[in-house]
View 1 (cartoon, rainbow, N blue to C red):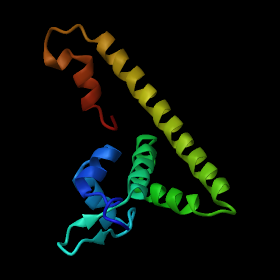
View 2 (tube, rainbow, N blue to C red):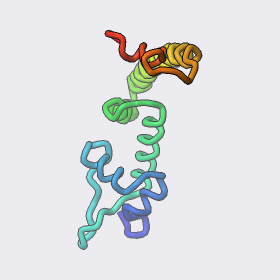
View 3 (tube, rainbow, N blue to C red):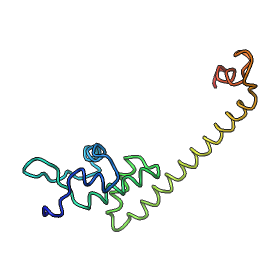
Length: 138
């Protein structure tokens, strides 16, 4: 790596839109390769690191866990079955998100009913929201 293509951790963070601590965390987690070090001890990166960080950030934005991101990164290098594996993981993530959305809609609907039933005044023991929260199994 030439010094002209070498980037500091600050420049990488800025280019990828992440915090410096995020880069260090991903290095510890093995999502980024160990960077080269200058004689001074400073980390030295290239634009490949920026691209990898953007990949990780976008995958996280789509709801993938760090372990799933690790799998996606490995699959992205698999010239034979990688795309099939990526599709399988994306499909599984989509189903998990759809299930979470359905659960949140149920929660929203239940809370909306409680809010609608609550007059907003009176004794706390008469409040339907507090009653529902106090019910066993609620």
